[in-house]
Length: 301
Image (tube, rainbow, N blue to C red):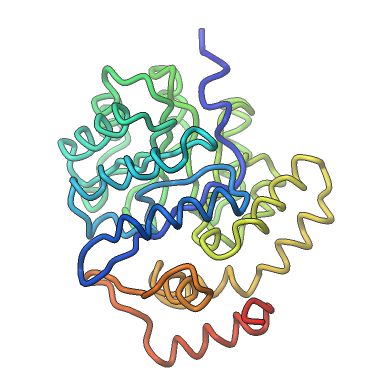
């Protein structure tokens, strides 16, 4: 019988925290400050090594250490979700085991990218990665980056085969998928919104929370929107969603997290918007465009 309590703390706004760099190195002290700012700012959890953290530019050691820092700073106050997926089965297995041993509250595992496996390969892959690990885990579904989609049938089979498979991050413009998944897998299946512009609509049809890059900029607003939905105050939630519309769109003015990192620097969350190649900082033209969005939203006042 499935343990209904697995993953019960996983809901609300759980932003993918940015990775600060300083002269090419990960700045772990700055990262700790970002985690603390998320918690004090009202976020319901933190996501370590999400897409916004540029994990593909990090070594396994750096990714593991970021997980440890996040857990150490959080001190159990909010859940720490560790993103532990990679292109390689061996790397995903190593990252997942390390995060589980470090004490992560849940794991988010992206579909293996570039390879474009069949659905039966995805199922076998996830079962192999999670073998012997009982931490709640979720699929990260982002076909725009990975070139592979997950079907409802695949989710259902993994739900049947893995008692600690509790949900997914859905970064696809497809509300129908969310409704169908919840209908098929049950409303205790936890779906997090991965596309900023669908934050309110996807929660309105049953998503349990957000894992959005824009949470690095406005943690309290996103937390308030989630809480308004839980109270069935949809007018307030929609108003907060509307307030964030231009910021949500600005996240995709260039490849994520280029715009978010610049805006985080502009708002004082980061000392510098440094990236590792092949990622690049915002151009001057993009900086000016983002400044106009921040000004229009009243965030620079």
